[in-house]
Length: 362
Ligand SMILES: NC(=O)c1ccc[n+]([C@@H]2O[C@H](COP(=O)([O-])OP(=O)(O)OC[C@H]3O[C@@H](n4cnc5c(N)ncnc54)[C@H](O)[C@@H]3O)[C@@H](O)[C@H]2O)c1
Image 1 (tube, rainbow, N blue to C red):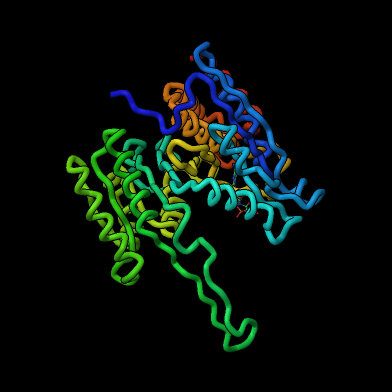
Image 2 (tube, protein in one colour):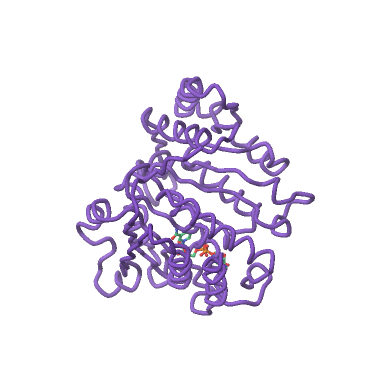
């Protein structure tokens, strides 16, 4: 079956590269190197344009997300390859919020796709689980929920203080992420979709999730649909991850359950993600942050960023190139050609060079 890409970029793609801060600046060039090595066919072309948005620029010029940036990215680029943001010199993290949350919300990137795939048995903390046992996709709603910043303080900084944070769920927002999860399952011939909420306690917001889920699942009769409360899901994912193909949930729960998934599959250094709006400019970033504790030492693991690039190539419809990156990462793990966080002794650039060569040799 041929799978329709989420973005029709044809034979040429334009990619905005925002490496950001800390180890973002170290791992992102390794990703670009790997992509260049994967794009060998004359039928494909890729243009990278780098943007220096991050803490240095913010501290120097007071600019986080420049004026007109969102429109420029939406109109002129197919995708954004992102590193990480966060710098101890900016304790408020203002620039990171402006850039990353700004792009997520303003580009309406409503899908946060976080694949959980164990590439090598030794990397999971679960006993008696092998690579075939841990392979599922988490879709987290990315533009609503508790993260929209609606709320306020009353009697702030007094003993009677009250803080309110609203959980915002629109029918349109809930429906499009649930539908995306089912479409993904159908496109990839996966059998099971699990929706997770806390409708037993959150009897308005998650009642909406319940009703929309029951409505949408009827359009996908070939897919086994299931519901689990989020606390049960957290237990079941650890007890037996083989039960899951696709999980879909709200912003807060997706944030947490996908991090749990990342640990089951080797940890932060290996976890990729995509912030996606099908058909529109979308943003791909490794799950990890800027890791100031190891930044500048040349030991950051570039594999999470390289797997992220694989997701970006899939999004562009360049599946065989995406597979080439994933296969090279699998080989690096098998041969233990890895950075210290995975028990190896290699540096960021060494691993990046190894991957690029392996991809090029295929
Ligand atoms: N999307 C993002 O840009 C993003 C995400 C998370 C955190 N942050 C920011 O990053 C900064 C640091 O946050 P944190 O320390 O909580 O999270 P972090 O992900 O940066 O680091 C957590 C731990 O994991 C290690 N680690 C992370 N990625 C690694 C890699 N590729 N290779 C080897 N080790 C790796 C770090 O050394 C650290 O010990 C903060 O400013 C935070 O706000 C940004």
